Image 1 (spheres, rainbow, N blue to C red):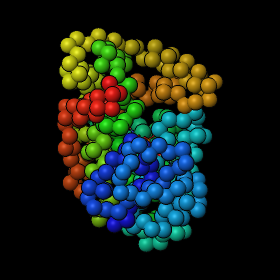
Image 2: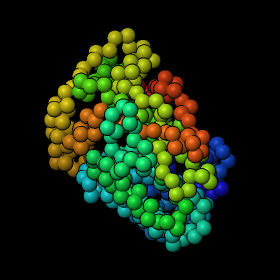
Image 3: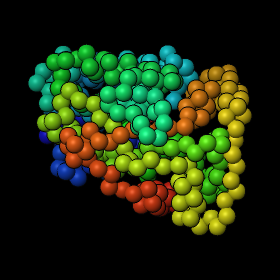
Image 4: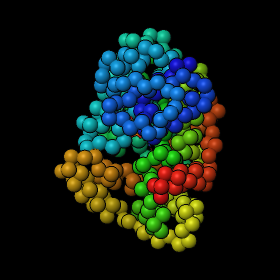
Length: 327
Ligand SMILES: NC(=O)c1ccc[n+]([C@@H]2O[C@H](COP(=O)([O-])OP(=O)(O)OC[C@H]3O[C@@H](n4cnc5c(N)ncnc54)[C@H](OP(=O)(O)O)[C@@H]3O)[C@@H](O)[C@H]2O)c1
């Protein structure tokens, strides 16, 4: 099968490309003039020059594709308008191109996010695919609008995948956490025991490709995640053990302090005109108690299961950071 991957130069997309190539598929990807090709170097995948805002390049990219896996998106932006452009309008452009230039497309897989469902109310009730939309950030709202654009394209055989937080080799977002633990510090938000779903990028990439090729998943939405929910404490302790940090200095930050720092960081970010690592919305996001989702539907429909345990995943990630001299 000819598979077009958007966002292939990024963290998740590059792993999706790896899984597709390992399974013998023909892969093409869209890259911008500014794209960094470091994760795709020497791989037998075909580059299509362009962007999700360049109609001619979209035509060239989609007309040869049997399957489109749309991973591209913005996880950080200066404001909601920028998120809307990168997540919602970009998705609409790709759908329009698929409609216009690739009738008979076999599958359109859209990568969404747990952010569209929002946090779960308690530990006993992780969100499911039937939970209502409840995004609490502009990122989540624009990913919801992107999902709605996909759902409206009823003539396209689509599948929507919602990952929770993703970690693994090539990630530079959760990487900051590893750097902190490597310095012997474990920072926790609030005084409650927060739980989260967290997926290793290889489990996610395998799940995305399995879903793309399963006939049962057409028109459906799935969470692809860890089967277990973790506390930041167990993640930090395991990370500290693997990094051979005998004693971690544990610091708990009250929610009010987190929101205060986040507000100031966001304000500085707005003045500098760059997306900030932390802003008020991200502060609201990280103080939530339960970012948990159920994998039951993916398990039932196409046999998804978490293959990489937290310990294996953390070891793999740390090994990679060390090889790259990031740690
Ligand atoms: N990472 C997570 O924890 C997480 C969790 C849930 C959902 N997701 C979703 O997973 C997807 C990938 O996330 P990621 O962490 O892999 O992000 P990433 O590393 O920042 O990669 C984003 C990718 O999207 C591409 N892209 C963005 N705008 C584009 C445009 N206008 N035209 C063409 N390509 C464009 C980027 O290309 P360039 O190289 O040219 O910039 C890059 O390849 C996103 O849709 C995100 O919402 C991620």
